[in-house]
Amino acid sequence: MHELSIAMSIVEMAQEEAESRGGVQVQAVHLRLGLLSGVVKEALLSSYEMACHATPLEGSQLLIEEIPIEVFCPKCETPRLVSSIQWMRCPDCGTPTPTVLRGKELEVVALEIRDSMAVDLGVTE
Amino acid sequence: MSGGMSAEPRPEARLVEVRKNVLKQNDVLARALRERFHEAGVLVVSLVSSPGSGKTAFLEKTLTLLHSRYKVAALVGDLATENDAARLARSQAPVKQIITGTVCHLEAAMVRDALADWDLRQLDFLFIENVGNLVCPSSYDLGEDLRFVLLSVTEGEDKPLKYPTIFNSADVAIITKADLAAAVEFDEAAVIRNIHAVRPGMEILKLSAKTGEGMAELLQFLESRRTHVRSAAAVNR
Image 1 (cartoon, rainbow over the protein chains, first blue to last red):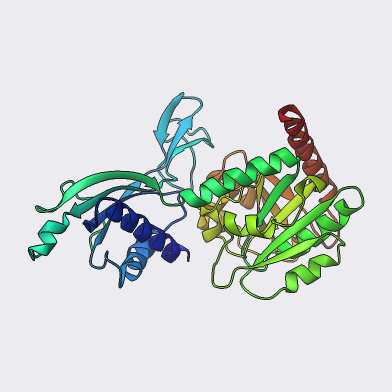
Image 2: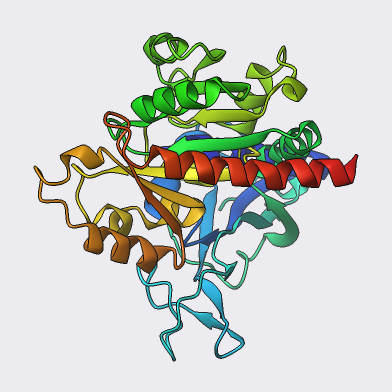
């Protein structure tokens, strides 16, 4: 179970990013997670909560966008989405498709931030 | 906690784009390692499998067979104990244990640190045995040329379907403990079908470290891959 160390990296990245923007408060982290990334969404979500504990990100949310597996079909000569991780074949013609184009992502794409001014004024969530 | 991607940020929040790979640090280190390996002309093979599928026996046999003709070495990852390194030292090859503590996989930084005092130019083959785990190692590039996933005949034929990500991240599947195949009524056709379902066209080798069956084919495969690495290194020099 490596989701905790990955969650800690995400928290660290978000914290660095927030500091570089003058200590803004992070409300949510948007993450792209490929189905072939080797990371389990549910485990990552609960690990994230733990990783945020006692950091400036405590109480923030992790919003995950799951990325399907896209392969290149050599016969159709076009990208296709596979229907199952256990069946890496073109959904249309059934040709085996070893070339993965998308689905390995593990990427922080955006942060939802609130400027520290709002925090100072005591704006509640 | 919501798992979905919300289109709009909360009223008082604003959205800033970041776009950063979470494993970037590991990927950068792995790329640097791969360049070092290629410059040195050493073929680097990593091994992943579940605990007990015969990684260490496979490695001991491979090191012993290669040792007479090549300079070989191994790094072995384990949560605790140096037992594997002690076992592998019998092959006469230099072996270093990486104790990962609570970490369930090897990372590129651990490999880099373990190699700090080794001269890679002196090596023909380097093996990196990962921690026995079919889940976590799949996410971490170690800079290896080839990743072998080992599966023993005593494990279920559907293991590739249960752990598709690691099979998909590997380059070669090695079926181990072939000497036990008949006793456990191993269905070879089913395993091959399942491997190719999750990783079409994947190279598959079947062998037994105990009887030596299939080891000649393995050595031949390793030697031919090393020739590729060597000629690539010569071109770059």
